[in-house]
Image (cartoon, rainbow, N blue to C red):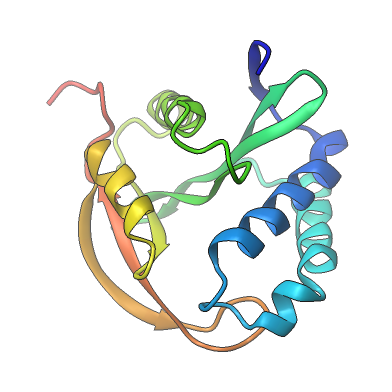
Length: 176
């Protein structure tokens, strides 16, 4: 890997973000999301989602990308102040399959924490993670998140998944 550049994403990144999002789901959500969806329409679906998110971005949306040369290798998307109880929602964080455990996700999280602290300092941060994704749960817990329970939902492409809500009631680095 060359030097990784982290920067705020823009509309020109929509296609690459959608591609990485689809690749990550195909690699990590098999058995949770329907195979027909992952093997078929997942990229078209993610392309539409990200085109809409970038073309009509709400004021509380922040997307940061990690780039290795011309290649997008990670991204995170957060919605500040999304929930009055839980705070800002980390809606997505994905790192190129095969590049996990190399610090990219940790750096993306630092940038999310910093953005939230600057724009929504009196709120926490939360995300949903698949109950079956122990590796991700371990990652978030290692960054100080607490498991606040789970619930069932219907994912893109149909079916049913069980997610766990991980919460930072206070952002890392904020005074107590």
